[in-house]
Amino acid sequence: GVGFCAAWVTNVFVNAGVGAIYGNACDMYWAYCYTSDLSAIQPGMIIAVPTEPYSYAAILYGHIGIYIGNGLVRHSASGYVITQSLSSWISEYGVTSTPRWGWLGGIVLG
Image (cartoon, rainbow, N blue to C red):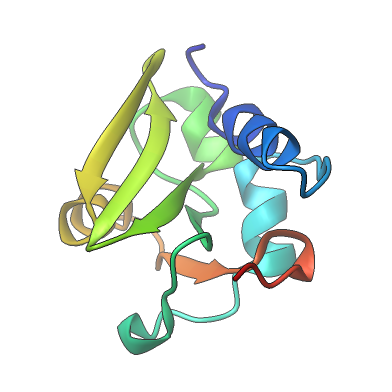
């Protein structure tokens, strides 16, 4: 639903058998996203910003998605699950903070 990007990410990982790791996008950014080096991004990593300007909730809680490979990010925005190019996700959501990525819960997939 609208404003529930982190819940969507958590549900994806629960359904994949990884387990439930809770928090908002800002929490997950500070806890698990450790690099903005494009050469380090791998499929299954979360990509997040701790704040972004498109809604009051986003200013407070940020935004998060999952890098699915081949230069694509899947995320929940405005009530829809969207697949977007990595470069456009970084341009759109990185206007007020630096996007970073890492392994949710520190669990390396693969």
